Length: 221
Image (cartoon, rainbow, N blue to C red; front, side):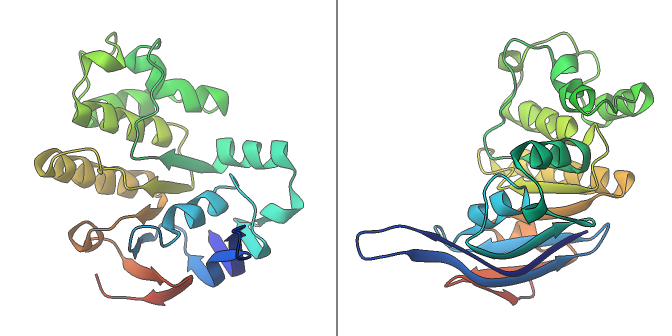
């Protein structure tokens, strides 16, 4: 599903390039869930952005499905994200002028993959039934994050990339969102790569890797 081979990424500094990632090798199988852990500033979000084609590596290869991201231009990477990826961030990034229903179906419509039965199922599972006509500002934080997860899963992506998806929630709301996320991932047969700093959040996933000094190591959550 996702393969990174010898991926490196650096940023310029007055002292020369600072390598945030250096020689990253990572494989994620279809349907597998993987937690990516590491201290603040270790490059976790950078790795996720590279996997999504939102940034390009200094060296190495990233393959999503059978497509090497290096073979695609910016428009090609954007199309690949629409068709095969779901993205969930710590910030909800909902469209304030759109209703709950329109936010939920936005990505599916962009990908021309809207499925009314799946949309109805998501609304029920997300606990948003009866709220379809409301706007994001009329929802709680937990409801907004559930909506963001539903929006990402509405096109039935093959891979969901989640960057600290419960970082803005209290522990009770976070646990509810994570339980729902894992359940919906299972229902949609979607692979998951989740960035988290919490061993408790990582524990239920299939596998965990730890990012330290630009390199990855397998780790038991």
